[in-house]
Image (cartoon, protein in one colour):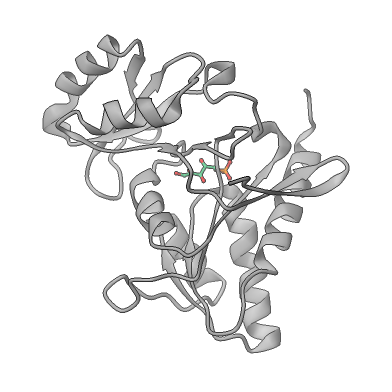
Length: 236
Ligand code: 5RP
């Protein structure tokens, strides 16, 4: 499907606007990372100003912290607020069961921690992200690794049938360094028919910090489409 840039940006923004309607006065929220979340941060900032909403956010990356500051969203930490009412985040792929591949923005570890600490996970995306099966269109699974373990993890991933590649930076030579001081491996596994099983195998490899497979975590997706925003709830 070929969608022009302006349409895609509108679809992302519309999905974000719908998601932010779920934020209520007094909520402590997780704020994800990425370009779609930037629209949510902007909208939340507006609501805080105009409705005098009291909301605190736990940011999931330096980007999301900076978005919070820019949009006047007060931030907090897990130390102060270990349970979150809601997390709003983006995704790189969403399957029919609302399992996700995340982490093309490199913030998967904190995003997964925040999602796990939330009573509800809302995902916002444009319709290009929706697929039948994760791994379609050669979408790789981002995996955060302790630098020391990189070559060991790469060899293990190959034995699981994956094609691993260390993520290289742009604007800097060498590997991307995550907000946690680690490396990222992007691994193409082809079609991922059983994401829970793959997740379990990857997490059992020493040196793997976290994977971009979010299995059974999403409650609601707001998907920006040509026909408007579709709200999709996870079926139990
Ligand atoms: C960052 C992520 C992002 O949520 C994901 O990459 C989607 O980003 P965008 O909204 O820019 O397409 O997982 O780690």
